[in-house]
Length: 179
Image 1 (cartoon, rainbow, N blue to C red):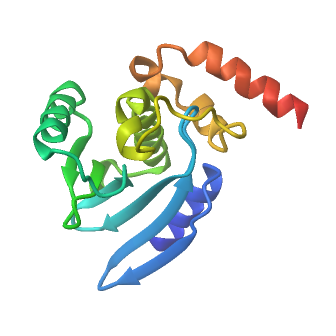
Image 2: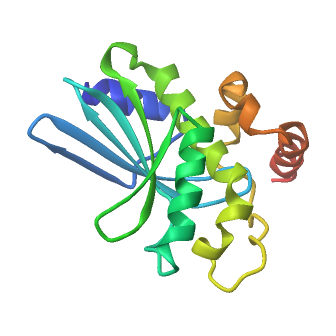
């Protein structure tokens, strides 16, 4: 499974920043870009008896009144059934998606990652206060998304999450052509 996972990551244009294997569990840490939100830390965990867990480190530990944040996470959990928000032990919001082992292949991995990145983009404006405390809005992306090809490869997986996808795609294409 290690070779397959690493091969899929290469094919999908994702380079792990950390790799680990312990007791049959494989993990790969990635730093990825959405179209609007950049440098999203994601951990991929593969347990061959269960499947793939994609774990997005969504925001730093919360230090607001938790009731408001919890209510928002519960609403998002209802609105987006393919992914779930939770809090880690250190009160850090995480976004999680799972792929059962019998469905795990390159395209299931790519679709899951693309959907999570698109969800991070979709919810960016509602998450500004956690990501950039004191800011009124998210900063504009400093560069084209490093995952533009991933979004292009799985448009059906992210269609309902990316209402402005054609405009963003055009911006990515123009920025890529300028490089």
